[in-house]
Structures are given as C-alpha cells and as structure tokens.
Image 1 (cartoon, rainbow, N blue to C red):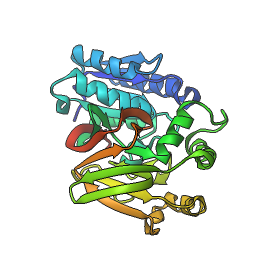
Image 2 (tube, one colour):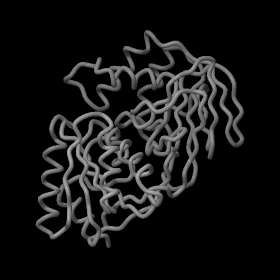
Image 3 (spheres, helix red, strand yellow):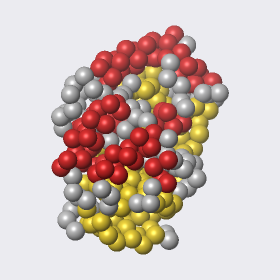
Length: 302
C-alpha cells in the first residue's frame, strides 16, 4: 500500500490534444479529496518532465504520476535516475494521455481516473526492467534504421495533423519507404555476432511500439533480457507484405527476420546514426544498449 507517500503529478497538458490537461486535473482532484498529499506540475516544452521529476525528488516526493505519452514517460524516467541515487525507492505511476501509450498497454495499467486513484490508494508496485543506451534509459523499444527514419519524420510534425498514434506512424512508414536506404551495421551481443546491411534493428524491453506494432513479440519487462528484432535487407515489396503481420507479431516468420535475446548489444555503423527510444532521439552510434534488471517500480492496480 502506497497511500502514505507524497505524490507529484507531472503532466503534459497538450498530450492527446488536451486530454493530458483533463486527465491530470481530474486525478489530482480525486487524490486531494481522498486526503493524498499531491502536487500538480505542468510541462511547457520538451525536457520539462525530466527537470520536474528532479525537482520533485529534491522536495522529498517518492511517488510520481506521469501524465502524457511514452515521450513524457521517457523524460520522467531519466529525471528519476538523475535525480536520486536510490531510484528503486520511488514509485512511478502513469496517467495515459499520449498518442500511442505503448508502455501502458504492455503492462495493462489502469487508464480511467478513478482506477488510477484506486491504484495510488490501494495498489502495489511491480519491479520491471529498463533498457539503457549510453546514459539514457528507455521503457519500450530502441530502434535503428528504418524505424528511426520514421520516428524522425513523425517528430518533425510532417505527418498530417489529423493523424495520431498508429495511423500517423503508418503514414510515415509509407512516405519513408520511398526514400530510405538500408544501412550497414555491426551488431555484437551475448551470442550474437552480425555484420551486414539491415532494414532495421529494434531492441525491445516491451513487445510493442508505434501504437499496436508488435515488433518484438516475445519481449517481457521483467526477464532481465532485451529482445532484438533484426530485419536484414529486403525488397520494398516484401516490407509492404510484412507490414500487416507486425500487428500480431507474425512478421518474425519471414526469412529476413531473426530474433535474439541479449543483455548487452554493441552497435557500430559506417557513419554515425541516431538511435531512437520511446519515440525520442537518444544517442548516436557507436553505442551500447544494455538491460537494467528490476530498475523501475511501477504502480499497478490490485
């Protein structure tokens, strides 16, 4: 039971086209009525969630509720790990209000305000793994190659404004398919030793990204491993055939796809390239990705 903790809500008010503001305000109101000591802090620009998490920890807060999408969560997690030498003593909860909310879906966390409040009052914390690229932590999937190109396209706001979540991601996929050129990589991790051209390499702590795309169907958040989905060079026709199968994970049956479980993965490319994680740009190659077992305490409902 975590009722006695002091809580801080860190909310992105523009996430979900205003859903973040409504959800955070409602949860804060319900918690206050229940007698919970809670602050509500709003982000105003990129990077704010990370700084707000640091400031909350400096004030003695040991319960964080993050309102927004996977990007807001990504910032808050990194603020948690830079803001205290004992991140395992902090409980993190989620108020999902973003475009994709892959992390919430993977853990089946509550999404209605009253259920979120019940989790704060009566729930329990579960230890889960995180991935780490250099000094940056991530909760869902780290990508290199085609997925990084799509993520950059979406982050630049080039998808039509009326699209969000999975539809926006798929729009970016079709646009980038015309422009993208496969990259040559050197991947080494545990029993993996690969060098050659690839379409993409996605390293999952969770199975899903981009909304409902099950890129690493076997990934578990508490097994102490990361699941690498490696797609070697394929024709664009094969990519289009493969795409619908990513929704149920059956793309792994294609001859160009292989799955590998790793604890650490070193990545080198001919030229420095960006790795994206949780939909955020995190590091350039060469880089090392590693799992951090049991790194995060996540609030669950009963």
